[in-house]
Length: 535
Image (cartoon, rainbow, N blue to C red; front, side, top):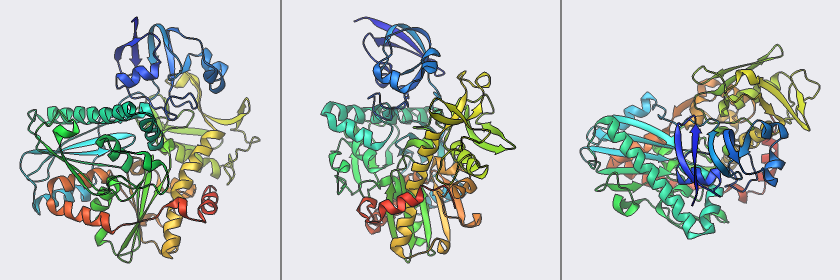
């Protein structure tokens, strides 16, 4: 079979692609990170790439529908639709792989060390893995004292099969072979992460004796090869709720052949071991005042701790906070606009790394919408005012300019569209609805909440004032908020090094009450109210 050479920029990867294969499928085979929100059906623009050089197949009907004539002229194509007809050079927007994970806050780091002293599971090195929908973070620890020997993170390569858990569940359900692809993709990624961690710390291959893994229920089931169909339909029950102990060999890990692998227990269909790890890291069992614990991600989990009880919900916040579904959205990597200020009729921004912008990440979008409503660019319903000096029309779509083409890495004007604002609204409304349902069920008014703990990579970097301004979070004094970083990773480190922490986590998973938002008769009413952009 004839093959063509494809160079992917800015990754610097050159791979062979068989004739008749889409660029997205080529990325899947070679584990090149490229988001595909619709799973490669040509219904979205998340896999949009720019062809810098080479010969291609003609645009498909889906591409002509989704991409403008100007975009096609500039070389933009949908990776799930286009096939090479010769050697290619392909530019991936935001295509730098994550190379490190956020550092733990000092209090979480001290808890890991404290738990290790309270009763350790062994000697030598161990690995904690936070298997997220978007990102996989790994931590190498000394099991004797809980010391962090190294950390590393990477984009979850399963994203080429779907940007969120629903699309991956759908892909896995379509055939046993596809389910196996998702399992193998995850285990290969974990293998690579463990090898990188060991190499960077100077640890010998094969010396890892214990691995602990957390993930949401879907990620947990997919990597273990468990059925996932029941997660896609009511009553959304997990196949397994209890913790799982398995050998690395059984799981398919080659990087730690003699290791025991521990998976944290799940709470419900969409609240998994990752949230159990967050609750463990934040010491939820010992919180006395009414407190919300929010782990923001593609799937956001929220717990209300009040009166000795813990109640959790899951919110389908979607990929907007990770740059998904946003016209120029990208993950929080070099070149991403992460801060936006609008004043005096001008848009000012800051990029990660300080260089030219390549797109806008979630925190930048959150800032932008907060600033737009303050400056009258949009009203409380999210509608753009076409009479505003910053608003212009591109065909039927209203938008505001952020960065000019000559200043951007892509050579295109970077803009925020009316549709982008709607995507941000959907994401923030999902989270606020979860908060409101928990408070309403417990009979607690928002002002009576004494603390809000924000976890997760995105949650670590958002401007709390912007989140309050758009109505995503309750308008409480800033002193009541704390941003703790990757609490899921910290909790997984704790259960890796300490049997006491492991017992507490398993007990907590059994004590948590789970609310299914879809079962609430007032869900739609609360959701529609939460869509409004206001305190």
